[in-house]
Length: 632
Image (cartoon, rainbow, N blue to C red; front, side):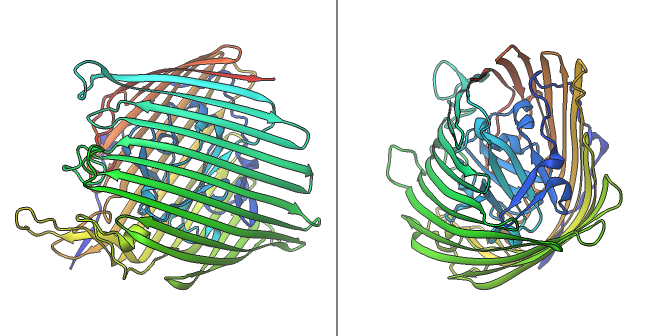
């Protein structure tokens, strides 16, 4: 056996970040007071200022100012989040938090779990255009106590807009790298998109309907994409004590998959993914101290993949999966604290040409208690008990402590355990190059973290250290041996043992937005360092064990002068298994009355880099766009 201690010094040269001037439009003001944002953790609703966990928030103002076109690109600006895009324009991406694998992060929409049981490769196939998003919450650390299974390293909750006025909006944009298209004798690589939104409000109801379309002929051979999204959000609130909310979404996403999964032989590969999602939830304040929130949800996914292109059925695979969830959450407020309690069930099913027919059931129950009875000290403790029809019973306890040193300074400590159950692909996949392992056991982790936070109306800053240990870590492996010509040595997942990781993180968010000033500024700065320790067997290749980031630096800077805008987003990544790279994007815009005109340049320095598999990401890319918004 060999012990791989992944450690390396970082130089000042690698950390040098170009601080370009940036801005948001005159109407993009930081109206979101982070201290007042309520983080909805299913049972208990805790203000951001009271949180003892490491939580990052991407506000609606952030979403509007950043030069990004998709949720995938937006999340590259969040510290601790590792987005590994296999293609641009939101076509496909894996996501992980603080050095975990892409299977260990739970994805939620308005608190509803939408994690894909076939493979986490589809977790980010989200039916929500950017125009419909209010904010994105990133909860770092073990979150199984809060969200159940598969929140081993954290969770990402996408919160859609609360409709507060009658409004219509439209956005169009188009861009190009101005490089020659390899698939045509003439023409350049380009991409374009449109987003439409309509909001309607009455005394007791609100309705939001959003549509998004993007298409591109790619950034290299066989990377063209076509993406359509439709999303509806409806709320009925007859009185202050009762509310019913419905969400329905659909996405049709197809793209050339050159190099996505099996390079170099998948040059003609193509993939078509369709996802439908619906949820119905309500909240009822039965007494002044007791409330309940039932919820039903369903997610259906179709995935069709052509290894040799759509002209042949050879190498074609089709997968149909469905997840139905039901849960009820309750909160009881007492003089000495608040109790959260609830039950949930999740039914997963797949029918696949390469995985077969399988189903499994999952049942969970939780109890949580939050108190501030002791002056300056907040205690949040609880446990989640889970039963899975294949993996049996498990319990995930956790504890969060926060002590207010002063009005602005807080010390936080949290500890907890979490779990990730194998996907259907992990267990049953049956393809030439990738073979599942039905004998896998679930991953189990323990993490402890400590840190310090500072929060005021203009500054949000935090720094911390964590240690995490994962038992029965799952990694896809194969022997590093010469095979006979024409013989394929397949990858197969196995529980390789312990995976340990230590991490340091720091972030700083500064908002200088005096409403009376002609010029206003906004900046964020963050740094993350990870030191994994993985045990591998000699002569065995690893697919995911050593792919996390080692160093991550993010610097975003915004300046606002009257109606002008100029904004920048910069990130430096050094991956353990890949060379480092620095990417800088910039946006300039001007605000008319109801119309915003913007121009973006992404990857200003035309850096060549790869985030996942064998897919080079786009070089320098130029875009122009306009956004119209009218309240009526």
